[in-house]
Image 1 (cartoon, rainbow, N blue to C red):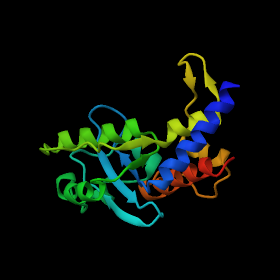
Image 2 (image 1 turned 30 degrees about the horizontal axis):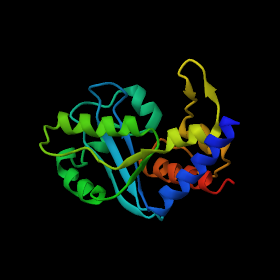
Image 3 (image 1 turned 90 degrees about the horizontal axis):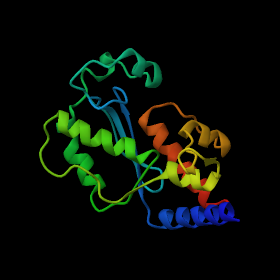
Image 4 (image 1 turned 135 degrees about the horizontal axis):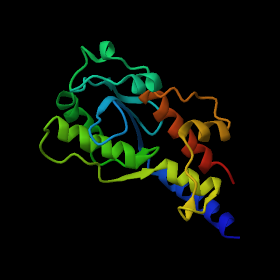
Length: 190
C-alpha cells in the first residue's frame, strides 16, 4: 500500500531530523502578500529551549486582519527593534544549523521579503531547512487529487489531530513549540 510506505518513510525522516537536533523557527507577519514583512520571530533549540524571541518593528502599519489573527498591534511593535537590528543575532543562531519550520516556504519567503524591504545586504536565506507541514501531510496521508500530493494541514489542525495539548496561538514562540511537538509526534508514531 503506497500510503503506508509513505507514512513509514515520514516517520523515519522525522526520527532522522530529530537526531540532527534542528532549531525550530516561526514568524508572525503583517500579512501574506508580496509586500508584507515579519513582526515577530522566535527560534527554539532542539530541546525546546528559547534561543531567540522578539517583536520586530515593521516599515508599515499592521493591518487589522493580521492583528485579528496574531494579536500583535502597532503599539506593541512601536519600541521593538527593526529587522536590520536583530538580523545579525538571528543569522548567528541559524548558521550551520538545520532549521525545522511548519510551512517553510512561507517563513523563508517572509525572511527574504523582510530582508529586502529593510534593504539588508548579504546572505539572508537559511540553506539547510525542512518543512514540518509537508512531512506531516505525508504522515497523515490525506490525498489531494487536484494537487496530486498529500493534503496540507494547518498547524492548528495538525496539533489537534495529534492531540497535542499546546495551543496554536499564532504567536511565534508558541507556534514554534507546536511545530516541534508535531515533529516528535510523527517520529514516535510507529
